[in-house]
Image 1 (cartoon, helix red, strand yellow):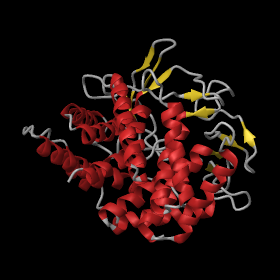
Image 2 (cartoon, rainbow, N blue to C red; image 1 turned 180 degrees about the vertical axis):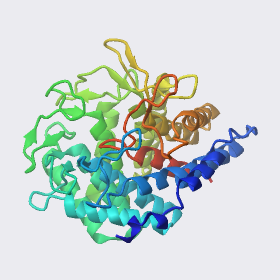
Image 3 (cartoon, helix red, strand yellow; image 1 turned 30 degrees about the horizontal axis):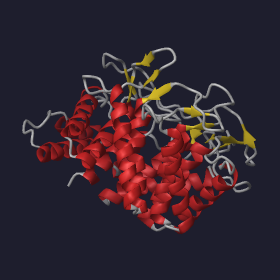
Length: 428
């Protein structure tokens, strides 16, 4: 595995910190939108290529057992015996595939190739199809349940890998998992997708996403990530059936998941699409706001796109309730108790940049651009680890690192990496 010789990736953290210094020079005093956009692009690009991607390339490869470590804590301690999550591995595959597509840097392709080969060998269930939720440190199946959310990330990742390599095996895998979800996870009577299954795809009611009870049968989170997965697959496999299923997911969002009164996304729902929670999740709101537009653009239906863009702005405006004066985004609010989760998470801040940049593209309203730029200013100040590289996962209300792992089952280079690539591709 020649790529594991770290010297072929980057010269080390001295290079990272050098680039990061240039990221932290502050906002361009010229307030013209074009100048501000180009400065935003420059700074985020430098962080992406000089800090974030190198950090994950240098820190995460398991040189003993293969694949990527399952956990790195806030103090840079690696836990080689931690289970390796399917979501983490799929997100790494997607991130480095996309990075290679944009930058044409062969080091990114080497990481993507390595991730793809490890997943094929260790995560895919040859007997029942689909992918395991986790494997152990040696790559042996650990949690063999089939989780719709996890499966969606493998579709997303393999579709993107095929997009940049033309690897037919990757496309075949993405299509196979899609067909399994349509066969087993789809509620064929009331629409939408169920959450959890046994290894052989028998329905289970395990609570894996914070559900309160088995009555929370459908989740906004899974349907949100099915939007990106199905859009990614449709981009490279534009079959009529795939088009219909992507359209269906968008209709589900419009008809079932977006609250008609508040325009927030409904967190949990029962089988009949009745809300079972009163949580407003600001990060999911703003992430959904731009993902549905991206999917609608692929379908090339002007009437649908116009409708989705209007919906997107309503969702973005609702999510603005979570934006603080310092540019950060809060996590969520429980309307039943009034409790607000004030800790700041890396992914919500990253999605704010893309979501409000998307709103600026649609409307031309500079107030949305201001939110994106303020979000980046907050990230530069509090989330970028200027000592060890990478980003902190959580910071406190006062801006102090909150001690969460820098890499684990959920924490990965996907939200912030994708944000960087979205900014680069959107700003010309």
